[in-house]
Image (cartoon, rainbow, N blue to C red; front, side, top):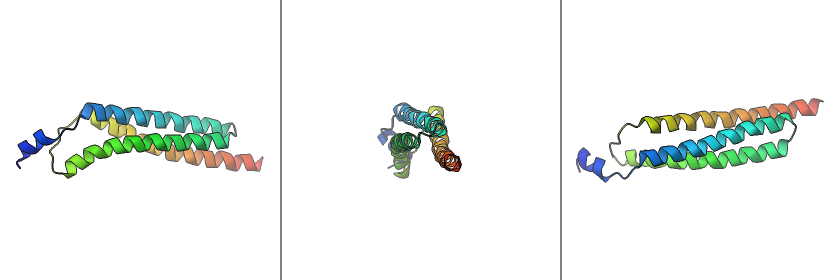
Length: 115
């Protein structure tokens, strides 16, 4: 199968996948930020539930992202998409935000124990 044939065989909808990633990652980022606010108010149980929900949302984003990686792994030459690149930026920054939020929660728990 030639590269041209593979391009035609891929059914990737970059716009749909990109928007799914942006939507799920955006929700996850909002939840992670809200978790910090809750931890600051010593609402640790609720903050941790927010982190769990953020992880659920980032998992959805990662699954959408993986569908593109799988297609490329099959040998399909996929076109460059600025929107998809933008969605990857959201994905990566959200993953970092979730990890930072966990650290803030731990820090606020430590401070709360010292009071």
